[in-house]
Length: 202
Image 1 (cartoon, helix red, strand yellow):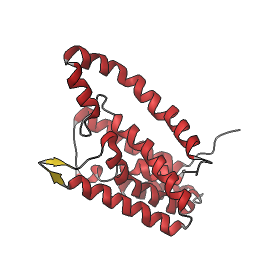
Image 2 (cartoon, rainbow, N blue to C red):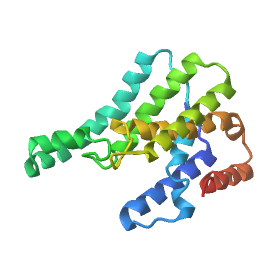
Image 3 (cartoon, rainbow, N blue to C red):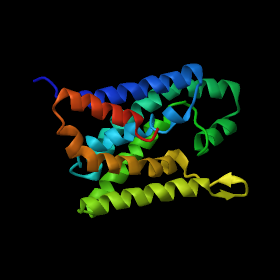
């Protein structure tokens, strides 16, 4: 059976990927790209989010799809760090909430936590409106606590949980917009919605 595709989603995701590749190759940043390129991935995550049966299911599934690949790709970075630094320095770096051994670790860990947070919110809150309000509240708390400083250090939770708190609001908005975005069938509206997604937040 052929998988169902949504051109508007694919185009928006592809544009975001191109921007991120450009970030990492050329290092060019501007307000027209920085505002939407990463949030749109969490927005799309919300569009396709389905509540798992239990917490164990979501933890095992997402650990297999996100954390195990992260550990596998981080292993070479760990070897290099052990060779070039002391074991104490490496342990501190792993536990440090501000840095990581592998460059993309933040996104994979953040995505994992977003699924966990979303599951727990949906488990205990049934109203769509209250779920959205809760997500946005968590997002605001995550963002503003990350701007606070204690002894010149930002208040950031380890393993990018603070980042996940900030990103969860975009997931909630994606959930609310799901029925409207996925119901668009005419190709003209698909490309129009792709453009709106691409410039959302820009």
